[in-house]
Length: 608
Image (cartoon, rainbow, N blue to C red; front, top):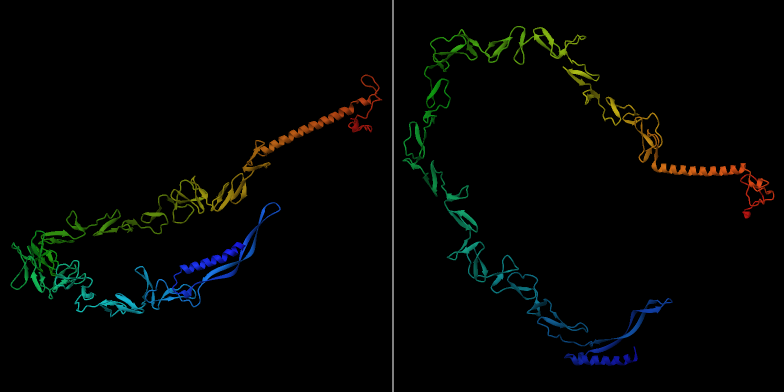
């Protein structure tokens, strides 16, 4: 701290102290605050910056310690200060140590805001229910005009000095009201409320209608008069315990309700319903509209019901010894005939008269060429014939074979389309096929060829063997379950590949019998596609050939040059040149004669 700071610090402390004393309204002068200054060491991380060799600033953090003076205001230990503003009722002013005093509610009280003011109000945790208040801690009391409820010790209920009566309750002190679902009538009585009661109903409880006395609810839910005793026939219960006749009925002298008919009923009829005549008992209306007598048991044939439960024979009929009504004929009817109607004979059932007037048996179906009608609807066969299941007379043959028929008694013949085998002693006939069947089929029926087992008809109508699984490409089914390669192909079983008698060349393969094809990317060198080459390879070969030809040409030139020089007299071999000068004195050092096979030791590259 600088010198000026040390001088001003105590002055500032004194000014603050006296300002606090002059401005504080503390009534107790013994509780004047005391300024206390204490030294304290604090530590703080300080950043230091230093310039490096390259001119850049470097940062370094150093923990430094400082001594400071801390000033605080304290009160004497014996100081008791008052709370401002003053604490409310049931609150105490409490000071903890040298802190500011504060108001704290007494036990059983707690702060509550009432009219924007904090007050200590008593607290009741139990027995404070409806219509109660808390006058002191832990003690709830009922409001004025209320008392503790009998079934609920927590809540209070209003007190009514007079009894409220039926369907009422004490809603407020000395004030009775109708219970829920009830309302007061003009006399002040509480009556139950029902939205809509029907005829002869009354409301006994809220939304509950019942029938009035003497009435009972029927299956339709309506209240109708009730009679304890069942009303007699054609009567109904018109009022409680009172029966009356139905509409259209009138009570006679015996008290029975009889129907009323305005018009007089016809014979054998009686008034059975109001305005309706019906047949008497034992009678029934017939098709003519009249009431005819009825017999519970059906009358015998040729008799009729003359009175209820009484049958008599019709005219021209008489009872026989069995009590049946039989027609009477004065003349005898003859064989297979009887008297069917008075004075009229008819053939018995199953018979009919012939030209001579005699009754002969009749058959509805034709008995055929070899049969006759022996009894009604019964045909019999002539000798050598018997009745078949189709009810026809067939000739009798003993032990006819298969696919044969018996055209006449004792004679078996083959059916149409069948023939007897010449080399067989069997009585059976075999089917005949005009066109011979193939190798793998047989004659299964007249003119019908069928494939043997393991064969089936192909698109050409021939029997072809069946192979499962199906034969692959380039193979065919030679026999049931066996595949073979087609001509020009070779393989085992179901896998066949084409064959070429002349082997295909490089970069080609045998795609079909005796046909080679180039591999994709290659071009045929000949018509048979046996040798194929790549276009890139072709150009490369052309290039190599050209290079080879050029090399050969160069080599040939060198050889020709060497040979020309070898067999031609070089200039240094002549003693004279073309001008006749003597060459033996020529300097050979510039000439390389090694090409011609002549050693020239005097030749050096420096002489060139």
